[in-house]
Length: 148
Picture 1 (cartoon, rainbow, N blue to C red):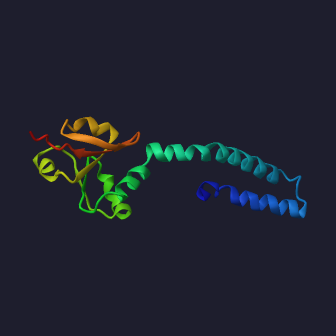
Picture 2: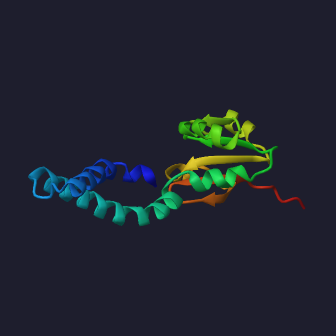
Picture 3: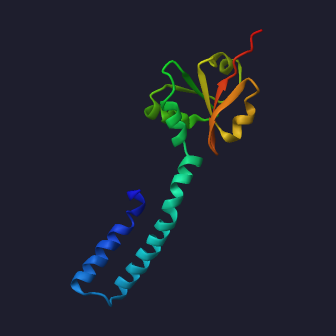
């Protein structure tokens, strides 16, 4: 959260300096106060929204889910090449597939999770069940065939 407040620090230091040395009537100080006030109002209105944004539109919940899966699980991604950046967070090797072809079908086993963006999840057929999702990303698992 501190990173969002970084633009406020130089102005806060300047205003503190001016109050200490009594430089209140300067136009520059008045401008700095106005800018700091606008940034402060912006931060006060945006910071409460960040947890909602993080849980709905980022990969943070997906990473938390993937950190708690068994080690023998394979993870692949479908039309999501940026998934390679998750490797450092979840310590799994993630393969990306751009097409649903034989290589993809051969790679998907019973212990395989598929990460995809929400706009591509309809491309996965009825052989997969959605096990986790937020507004932008989904995780699927292969359906187990029913044995009679």
